[in-house]
Image (cartoon, rainbow, N blue to C red):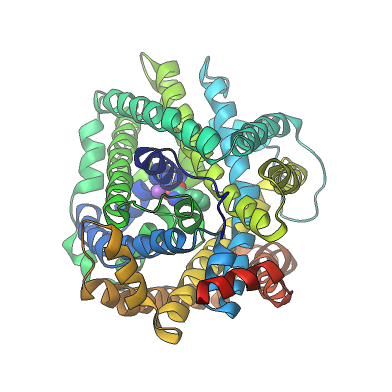
Length: 502
Ligand code: PHE
Ligand code: NA
């Protein structure tokens, strides 16, 4: 039906792009902390089980859907069953929201790569980050002013992303990832080796890997393991459906999925080793225990790391550049994949050419991003978007998709056959059990658990109205967008569906 659809040049090119999407901030600043916090070495077992029982099966499902229908997420789901289109647009909206704020973090990382030369944060990295660099307002609220030091790197990030997307799947996305991913691996490996040579590295690794076996009896640890796997593999929001829609007919799906998943997990382990070696050094120089210096997310990357970089006796600038450049590249390749979900959906929906779609969609996304985030309130908005879209976007959309496909429409056997037709590694009953039973139960339980926390107290103690707009408003807005889009007539999709039926 779509003879003109773009294609990846090679399977290796697709694999690089898939790894580029998966390896992101989640690997570098999320995994080390989550592992540390949830049993250390003992976390690796639940993590591995989550990977095998839910992560890889869901990844294979997304690859198979994209490969089977060769369409963006909304059109693919619509071709499975018409009302399912709504889930696709919901995912598109989620990707739009993520892209809008993810770009800002990449922009910070780019800026900090530069700041690393000469340690421009001075002797108070915390104050520098919040007051000088971001100029964060006292409290969340209405936007009260613009911060140009964040705005211009952000504009730069958007230019790079839009140019790559404008060049297309093969000449843009694939080529960029083929350069970025090997470079990222090298930079990161050198960074980890440098971290391992630091005084106190062993103490850091002890803190991370010493197993607390009792943790495995704690349900929260299992939730954390599944949560990390879903986030880290970028599953549940249409990214892999989109990327797989550009695959050639004869592509091994399951083998590729397994390879991408293990590459992502290897990168996570490596990040754990690098980050905790550095934290071990920080604790040792401060004469305290690693437990006292552990940080995660923004605090780890933009406060703790600058502190570590500044206190290195030699090679501080190198270490900083390696770390922040890795963060920038990892974030950039993930961002490219998120925006492409929106671009490809708009292309399918409007039949606009690639460049026009990128200009339209990318332009709108970039504009929202550039208007909202380089502001005094940007950090709070980002934090709230991130929390709500992760909990009630990605995880919920993934859950709904699985229930609809597995339970309502009972399509798993069909997709199992489709994957087996082209793949070396055969899917058995285990795959349907993992997807139809294990995954929905766990996602459902995670949803229940986070909703309970949400209703007990305001996220981060933010004010009600702020959370209503920048939290629930965004999460529910994405659902509403999905439903409205699916209600609109779409003649070309009907024709494609008729052709499918023949
Ligand atoms: N999987 C990415 C990571 O581990 C996260 C991501 C989020 C990727 C959104 C794409 C889109 O960091
Ligand atoms: Na990841």
